[in-house]
Amino acid sequence: MAPVEGQYLDNIDPSTGETYGRIPRSQQSDVNLAVSAAKDAFPAWSSLSIQERSLWLMKISDAIHDKLDVLALAESKDNGKPLKLATAVDIPRARDNFKFYATAILHDSYDVHDMGSSGFNYTLRQPIGVAGCISPWNLPLYLFSWKIAPALAAGNTVVAKPSEVTPATAYLLCEILDEIHFPKGVLNIVHGLGSEVGAAIVAHEDTNIISFTGGTQTGKAISSVAAPMFKKISLELGGKNANVIFDDCDFEDAVNTSVRSAFANQGQICLCGSRIYIQQGIYDKFKTAFLERVAGLTIADPLLEESRMGAIVSRDHMNKVLSYIELAKEEGGKLLIGGQQVKLEGRCANGYFIAPTVFENLSSTCRTNQEEIFGPVVTLTPFETEKEALELANSTPYGLAATIWTSDLKTAHRMAGQLHAGIIWVNCWLLRDLRTPFGGMKQSGVGREGGFEALRFFTEPKNICIKI
Ligand code: NAD
Image (tube, rainbow, N blue to C red):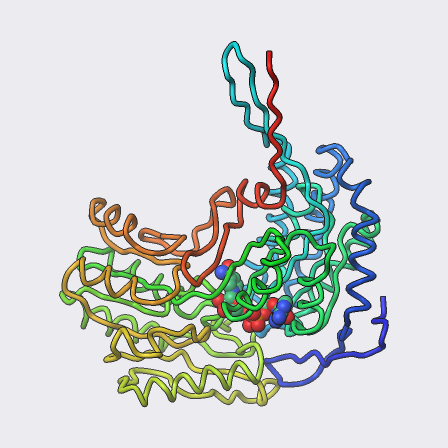
């Protein structure tokens, strides 16, 4: 549907710097229409049987599967990420999110609390109404579906906003909804700016529940509007994740996975490890091997098979990342590799590419090590003891994820128990089980997504007490 006020925004391919499309610059009036459609659709959608809702979500999942190549290409073009990554990770995971929640609701159950001869309680979990789902640009369809799927599965209707920076796959999802004749009004996707459409969704009196993924500052702004309205809110925010690497780790695995966790998606994954702490005994060896692998990362046109580092998502974001590289130098950081914009030849000559960048010699308290850069910039820091590693890892206001590399289970358990992060990976990174809770503590967020946690979030528990 065209935006009510007829305004549009340019959509830019970050690998070429060229505008290749337009998206609606929707406004409050469009959000009002979407919320009203969602409200009207709620009674019918929430009264469908679980099996019927499950079938609808499976249809979406199957359609994503059938269009995997088209969606992956669109994601790569829109975001700048290597096509290979979008094909192997983003789109399959979006498909699997719908499939997971289509089947999860078939196996969900309610609590019963038995009071013996006096009676018993059972707890219903009922859909809430219209859910507002707002997502960022780094894993566009993947994170969009991570909200939409459980919201719909739980019986809510949805008004969703993708990032204005990467709207393409959300648009293609609308085409899929039309093709499978998905019931009108159940899932309404509104494009536009965060300060206009996003803010209007959050402030609308009929969006009873808000699920947001994005930056910490935006999360604060959303909370300040939604909390006084007593909306249910889930916030998945920024991160500044630590990789803690002990002397006794599986060296090759630790190096290779740290390179991946530092630079996958150009370092633009909230779970990327950007502070790498290495125990003194292997620091030099690790640094040498790490830099060798980083030097081997191919920065290239995201559409090429060999591309391992694609484009940064936008010119603004590229400039922000470059400014952090300058800051790291000003703070006394020793640049070990990278540190500059990369100019490619041919089709991508005007694209937004940055070389993978590694610094050492920076204190844990400096801004480079405290603030989320969200790009291909990491720091290496040595530590002596487990206690020191823990203090360093816990020294930021964020608490999203951490990795621990050791062959000693006791060290792993001790560290895992004390790290301030919602997701801890031991000897791995990004190993995903859809049933587990996902989210961060401190300034990385409030609430958890994933598994049955998300179904709990998108429902209202109602206890019914029966006297015998
Ligand atoms: P952002 O906060 O700028 O935008 C996220 C979304 O919110 C976009 O759709 C945007 O249009 C919208 N928005 C902006 N202002 C708004 C407002 N006032 N009201 C409502 N909506 C508004 O974030 P971004 O730059 O798109 O994404 C990068 C950030 O997302 C990073 O900080 C990253 O760590 C975080 N992130 C977190 C997770 C997680 O699971 N914790 C996952 C991915 C990304």
